[in-house]
Amino acid sequence: MSSVDHHRRIDVLAIGLFGLAVGALTLGVAQLGGIHESNKVGTLVIALIFGGIVQILAGITDIRYHEQLGGTALTMYGFFWLTVSIAKLVSEGTSFHLDMVLFAPINFVYAAFSAVMIYLTAYRNATLCILHVIITATFASTVLAMLNIISETLPGILHIVVGFMAFYHAVASLTQAFTGHQMVPLGPPLLHRKGAPMRRATDQSVPAH
Image 1 (cartoon, rainbow, N blue to C red):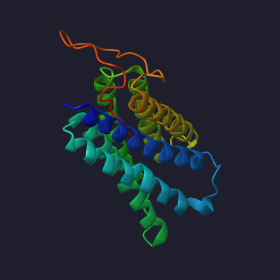
Image 2: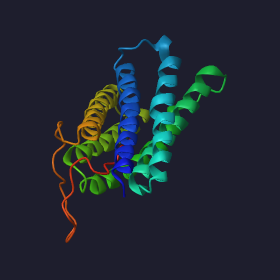
Image 3: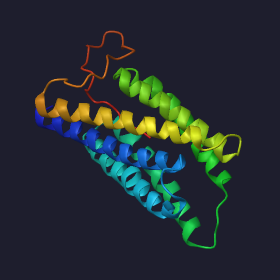
């Protein structure tokens, strides 16, 4: 496989993670009250475009490079953001006011999916694995918030953490692609396949949420 193809995959990873960073940070600030309720539609549009469309496009591109794990993660998380954002926009713009309990099952399923991704990304690098730990906690806390068991404060804080970690990994991917050196540390893989050669921390990493 050519070095050109390798660099293209790294760039796709960075694009997906930047989209995640913008979407998660915007949503997190809104949940903590930093963005006024009157701007809710704008918040949902940002989440739809960056968290949804950007990740889906990056995931489709990753699949074209035969990266099943990365492509699956990007597209599935992207469709989550796209679906939830559209549903909430419909609720805001029409007389159909959807109950937040509607979104509990999808968040529960994605919490389970993210838990599986913790194991899979442990073979890639420590930062990506920890990111999925936070993502799993975010989905789980969101379910509790939608069931009115807790407030949106905890999900908001966790979304901000996800956003910063995604931005950090995106910068690491870009600098690795541009310089050929790991200038921003991501940590070694936490798990190793028996008999498999050691891989660099940024090689074929998987974005998320």
